[in-house]
Amino acid sequence: MRIAILADIHANREAFETVLADLEGRDIDRLALLGDIVGYGPDPEWCTDKARALVADGAIAVRGNHDHAIRNGDADFNITARRVIRWTRERLDPAQSAFLSELPFTHREGGVLFVHASANSPEDWNYVSGPDRARASFATTDARCIIVGHRHVPDLISCDLTGRTARHRPTVGLAMPLIGSRRWLAVVGSVGQPRDGIAKAAYAVLDTARQELTFLRVPYNILRTVEKLRQLGLPESLALRLNWGA
Ligand code: ZN
View 1 (cartoon, rainbow, N blue to C red):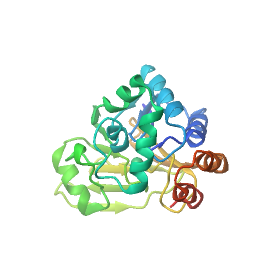
View 2 (view 1 turned 45 degrees about the vertical axis):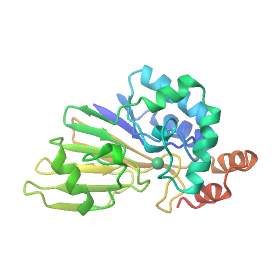
View 3 (view 1 turned 90 degrees about the horizontal axis):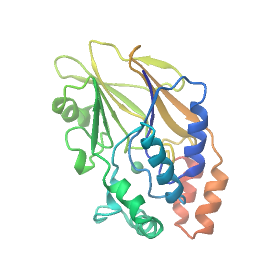
């Protein structure tokens, strides 16, 4: 099975639509939405409705911290994130808010665990920022593959039988073999707000039969998203961030 994994869409309609179009012809069997469908971006209603339709069609979806904050506290958020989440709450109707805030924290399918932040503590929104921080996730689950978002920076970490972890540099467009003697944790990068200095939407494709993971990047119409942010009076730092991809 080939699963396309989209994390951290962040209400960026242009990036979301571009990635969905990019999937055409890639022989995808299933979609997984890894949380943070909203927050930061100008199109929370459209992105939530699209995600709901995809889930109704069989897509996997888990809850991100911004989805969670729609009906819960936002005390952990910085001032920019909090301002936009409060604006987002006003835009969403009760059904849209319920969909986001009732998404499961994790989804397990065979040997693959999907979670927004970390496997060891999904509700604490910890960042898996490197091999050391990944150890707790590997120790919590027997899943061969843990797929996460949250960091907005693509990363690939493996763990051997003794529990030793190692980092592997994600190479865009290359099917990376997930060797059977190790377990794997992939951070797939962000569709709607990349932070690795590359201003292109990021997503990944997991081929469970071939045991391969492919990191992908697609350019999208950033100018249009930026224009919407400015027209809506949302924080300028978010517009600059999209331009820089950082
Ligand atoms: Zn996010």
